[in-house]
Structure formats: C-alpha cells, structure tokens
Length: 370
Image (cartoon, rainbow, N blue to C red; front, side, top):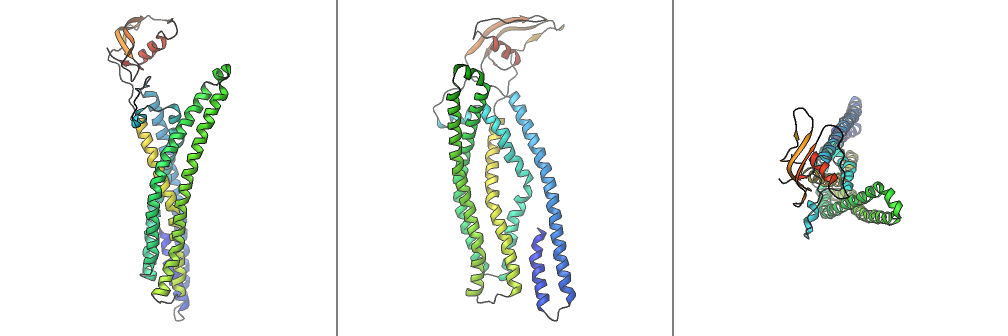
C-alpha cells in the first residue's frame, strides 16, 4: 500500500520542477523518496509471497490429511433409500469420484485463498484509496467516474449470481466424470473380458463432454464480468477528465494530469483484479461447502455388541449378534453365535452367503441392531 505515496511524491516533484524559485535539492529529495517507496513496496511483496506460500502448503496438507482420515472413518452406506424428492441427492454419500475431486480441486481452491490472502485486503483497499486520492486531486469531477464503477459493479452482481449457479452444476458434472473414470479403471480387466470397454468409454466421453459444455458457459460468464470491469475502468478517467475540464471548466495542468493518470492506472489494476478475486472467492465458498458436506457424513459407530476377546487372547467370539448394512434396517446377519480360535480360520460358503459381511461386522463396518 506504500505505493500510493508515489503519485503524491510525483505531484510534489513536478511542482518543484515548475517553480523556478524552489531549490533544486527538493526535486532530488522527492525522486529519492519515490525510489525508496518503490523498493519498500517490492520487498513487502516478496515477504507476502513467502508467507502466503507457507500458509498454502500447510493448509493444503492439513485438509488432504483430514479428508483421508474421513475416508477411513466414515460409514460406508451399502443401501440408500430411494427418495423422489429433488433434494434427495444432497443426502447421498460421496462417491469415489467426488472424493477425488475434493482432494484434487476443492482443496486447492480453499488453500489457494491462503496464498492470496493479502489480495483480499489490498485489492479493495487499493480501490478505495485510489478513489480518495483522485478526489483530493481533481475534486468533485471524479464522482462522474465513480458512478461508472458503481453501475458496473451492480451489473456484475447480477452476473455473479448466475455464475455461482453454473459453477455448482459444473462441479457436480466433474464428480460424475471422475466417478465413471475411476470405475472404468478399476474394472478394466473384467470389462475387456466381456467386451464392454467401448460402452463404458462412451459413457466417460459423454460425461466429459457435458462437463466441457458447462465449463464453456462458466467461462463465458467470467469473460463477461471481466469485460464489464475493464470497460468501467477505461471509462473512469474519460468521465473524470471530461467533468474536470468541460463541466468544471478547470485547466488540466501537468501537475494534475500525470499524478491523476498514475492513480487511474492503479485504479484500473484494482478493477481488473476484483472480478478474478470475486470468482475465486465464490469457487472457494462452493469448495468449502462441498468439503463440509463430506465431513458431515456419519462416521462408523462403535457396535453395541463388541467382540469378546478372552484374557489369554486365545479366541474371539460373537454372541447373539445381528448386523445390517449402513443405511438399511434389514438384517444381513441375524443372531450370530460364532467363535474364532487362535490360529488360521477359514470361512467357506456360497456366493452372497455373508462371508464378507461377517468380516465387515467384526471390523465395525456394519450397523449393530441387537
């Protein structure tokens, strides 16, 4: 923010050069001060980049670790109740595609905001300071330029609401594409055995095409936001100088024009960064909501009937234990009485007889209902 002292120093430098009675030393002092201010601004930017990068790496690692822990501890729902309501999909457990998208994209969207945290403060503050300094420099004529900025931001507020809705749809399409892709990779051997790989590949390509179509729409809305801000930032100096010269009837001196142009350039830079900043914040907001929804999924519950382990550790027993798949009230194992002696135990049975369910029940993957 110290860079905003440069236009003021430039104005004093130009005035001292125009004033024949002013000492020559004054112009040199203002030039040295301008150089010092720019060096301080560059060094502060380096420090900001260093600490922002550290915050990014730390927060990204913490969130990925948190998601990995949640994947291992969450309840794996084997059956989801069929609900015809439109909001029923929101309560469904996260698929593997969504988990991959959370770790790859959503975590990045949130962690990146820590890297660019200083811009959340400096960009709006720079915009305000630019307008205040322009007001002090040329007076009320800058209000005509401020009106153009206000109108542009009102238009962008409407566009942003539409962009936010399409961004949510795009992320859901990405989840679907990653889910189909992961299933295809996991089952590629069996799909090739039965000759189904082309059919699954077509499904993946269709999901990818749908994602690209939605991404094109979100990109067009983002371009429209950038265009509105660029047009407003270009019209600000035109409207301000028109009001200063034509409406106010004041002469445009050199000590007014050059500092004002430098402030207009800073103002234009802030306006160019604001659309991207708003878009990034909206994406981060959506990403945080998706991560919160995933973290809010139920964890594995400690079964009410714990396996009995004898003091000598000889074997493990279950007595009159009943289990069901998470999210389903129908028993998959009912009134089980079984003991596992020390050593190797082999579980034999027909397909779908409950062998895997028994192991999952011992591990706590199933809900206990007795």
